[in-house]
Amino acid sequence: MTDPVSLSSVVLRPALAEDAEWIAELRADVLRADLERLGRYDQTRVRQRFRDAFEPAYTRIIVVDAADVGSVALRPDGDAFWLEHLYIDASHQGRGVGSRVLAMILDDDGLYRLNVLQGSPARSLYERHGFVVDSQDDVDVFMTRERTGRAVAHPRRPLS
Image 1 (spheres, rainbow, N blue to C red):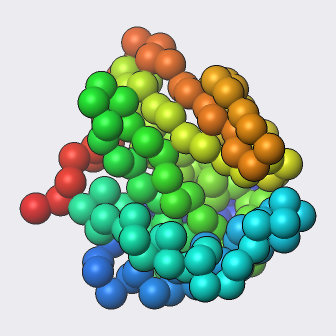
Image 2 (spheres, rainbow, N blue to C red):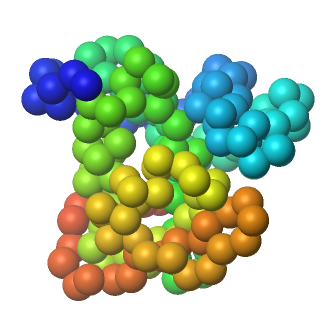
């Protein structure tokens, strides 16, 4: 594992419509092992599900040392936000990027929901950031992070 301190820069940039295809490919790569283990991998469907749900206004591109390495989305839903499409290229996993991104985007005053695949190592990342299990089935684990009352500034609204 690379030392997380060695990351000189982790920033988020607004997503553009033209980011959809490389993020769909990244999603297929990142989710493949878990989906295969669950007997759910379909090389066309894994990409199409992302394309169908992609909303650039709610999505940020994760940039590490000036290179696009992932994505994350916060989609508003009533009084909560859905944390979606947190995908990080394998070359940058295990380096603290996911934790840094979550620290940047999660407001302690907000209510957040997400779902993660059963058996995914990402579940422990979410648990470290205060998410708890609400429910689960054979494929998905649904998690929530309750409001804690401590505000952290970050952009949560769609970009104009």
